[in-house]
Every structure is written in structure tokens, then in C-alpha cells.
Figure 1: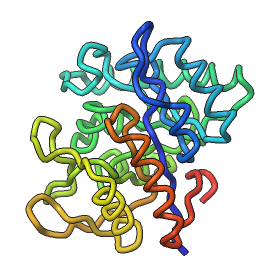
Figure 2 (figure 1 turned 120 degrees about the vertical axis):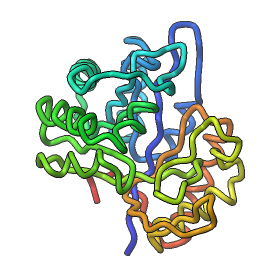
Figure 3 (figure 1 turned 30 degrees about the vertical axis):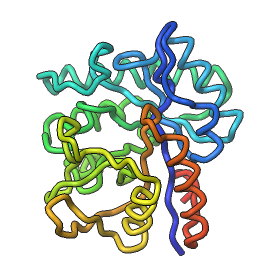
Figure 4 (figure 1 turned 135 degrees about the vertical axis):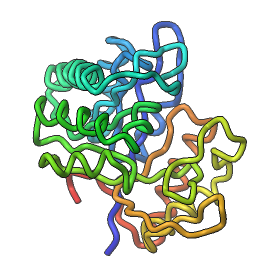
Length: 254
């Protein structure tokens, strides 16, 4: 029997600016990563997204990022391990307040964008993020790139982890994601995204841009809520996973 969680980055609107189609996507995913105000989001959006997730019985996670609204948290910033620790504690604590005030329980933490990618290869940064999550709530799952330093460092300090793979991103020979600056970084076709996900879940393999297979652990699949095809991907992937005999359920239920 195969099991996988389907997660989506959400709550990334800010003030008068609207991003994504959270309400529609929530019908297909099992976990929501909610922005915490640094790379996107604001208090009103955080509260509204928490309410929507609870209404749809979708599990909630914090999505802390770098303090870079203009760059949507996708630009590398040379933060120290101590700074990373502090910004993660701050953001996780903020979302946890909204979740508790709405009668919910937080399930996980997944770093966003550049912070996520930097921590995938930087053990000091990965450990700082892991310690921040552990000290706020050691019962939370930490979601990180499959095979990354973030997963390794989190497990060293006793955090529960979930290895993440991506439906809409291409991979390099070492298991890292193709940088967004490259034209081949994103998968635009529903069929290609579905095929990549099913193979990662069932065969633990992904075809890299170099044409080789990389062994990968797929426990939760990400769909980017700001992506042009986010709703279509979510619907297609959910339907095809279930048709392929793969049970889709939240990471805390597997």
C-alpha cells in the first residue's frame, strides 16, 4: 500500500494584493503551508487561511521565509544561523497563535523558498531551523527536501520529519531542485507533473535534467499555490494518485 501527503503553499496574499486560489485548492490537498508574514501574507490573510483550512479538514503548517516581500522570499540572503533560528521561532509562533485561537492544532513547519533551499545544503542553517521548530513544539513535523541537510539535521535532534518532493519542479543530478533562474526549472504540463509524482511515490525515483535517475523518498508532495497551473495540478494529481492505488492523506495520519 502506498501513502502520500499532498501539500500546498497558501496564504500568500498581502494587503490588497491577491495570490493563488486557496479556497478551490483546499478541496484537493491534505496539508496547507501558510505564509507567516515575512515573504508573503499578513495577519488578516493568516487568520482567513487558517479558517479555510480548518473548514476543509486540511492540516495546517507554518511556512516561514526570509524577510523579503519584494522578492517573495526567493532571493538568497546571507543570514546567520542565529538569525535563521530567531526568524523561524517568530513566524512559527505567530501562526501557532492563529491556529490555537481558531481551535485547531498545528501539524508541521516547512521553510519557504530561498530559506528552504539554503538549508537543504547548509548544515548549520538546517540545524538552526530544526532547533527553532523543536523548541517551539517538538511534536511538529519538519518538512524538507528529500535527502537534504534539513531532514538530516532535524532527525539528529529528534524531530519528526517528512521528506518532500515536487510536482511542478525539475531536479538536478544531486537531488536538488533546478534553480528558478533556468528556463527548465518548472513543469508546465499536467501529464508530466502527474507522471513525475506517481513514479516518485511508487518507484522512489525521479528523472533528472541530466537524464539520469535519482533515488528519492516521497512522503509529501508539494504544489506551489502561486503557480499558473496550481489548481489544475492539484485536481489532476489527486485524482491520478487515487486511481493509481496511492492513498492521499495528511502526514500526521500516515
